[in-house]
Amino acid sequence: MSRGWAAASLADIPRVAAAEPAWYPLQHVFGFTAFGANAFVAAAAGDVLVDEHDERTSGQEELYLVVAGRARFELDDESVDTAAVAVVAVRDSTVKRRATALVSGTVLVALGAPPRGDFTSTWRSEHFDGVSRVL
Image (cartoon, rainbow, N blue to C red; front, side):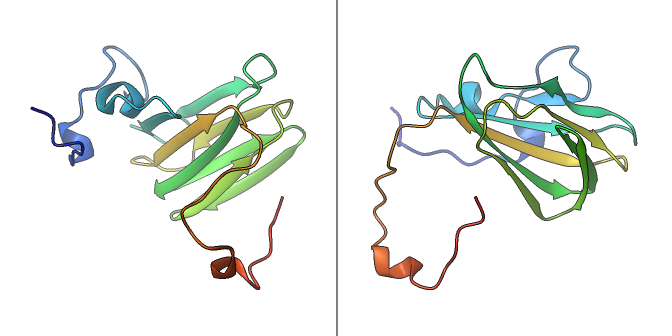
């Protein structure tokens, strides 16, 4: 019987066979239906963690979390180098994006879903007083 929650070390999550870099399909393993979630681990500097793409077809927004190591993001015509723990947010589905590991062992978590209009949060709006938005 399901407890409604699960916890696991990334090392205990099954990998997608023959995928390089190592691809851990978090959304599939945990059965999420509200958003996509994947983790990628680079074996070497220069490994492409996220192939160049845009999300014009799906329209989805994506959030990338560099949780270990360093990665270079190419976003349209700009390049951004990040180090753990960094966040890269791409709300515009037309932005071409790509991520490459700058060091071995870089871990990138990618989350994505199509926008649904206003997000309804369980947090009260006053929690965000004085917190500005970047996008």
